[in-house]
Structures are given as C-alpha cells and as structure tokens.
Length: 141
Image (cartoon, rainbow, N blue to C red):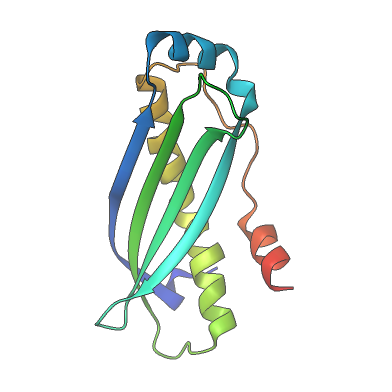
C-alpha cells in the first residue's frame, strides 16, 4: 500500500450519534454490551474536481428486538485524490475499501470508542481486529 497512489485532502466527522434513552437503559446496556455488534459500511461519492469523498460508517448496536437498548454511530468522511494514472474500477475500489481504510480506521475507531466511553460506557472495547484486505477480497473475489 502506497499513499502515492492517492492523497488524503480532507478528513472530518460527518455525523455522530449516541442514543441512550434513560438511566435504566444505560445500566442494562452496560451489563449487556457483549450483545452489541460493530458493523462497518463504506460508501463513496465522486466530487466535481475528480476527487472522491469516502464515508466510513461504524455502527455499534444490539440487533435483538429489545426495549432497553442504545445506539452508537459515527460517519467519518475522507476526501481523497486518486493518482490520474489509476483508472481501473477494481484498483480504485481497493484504494477506497482497503488501502485508505487501513490508514484512517485506527483514528476513527479511537474517536468512536472514546465517545462511547465518555457517553457512560467505560468498559466498551472492540475485540476483533478489522482485516480490510480480507473484507475486500471476500467482496471482489
């Protein structure tokens, strides 16, 4: 992975959401954080100047139909300029879904974890490492 293939122009938090409707929900969720799953969604948008805006969305939620649950989400945007010699869709997809994510994900994860901890969940952690190479390979091979 070489950042010479693309350049990060801009990074910003597009949206943040922490939803804990009550104190009883907070206490319940603290005890049941093991039931929460982290989902990652990556989307891209072509901008006017031939740059791309990539939105990396992390969602931590309990997918069970429970009354007492919280919801956590961050949308982190990165604007990149891809080297003009790169035109193949597959190569651009790899940059967006893999190469860029390996650079920005540690920062996004730290921001998200810090927010959730400060929102009343000091014990939250993400145990699994995200293998962007494998995610890309699974999607395109």
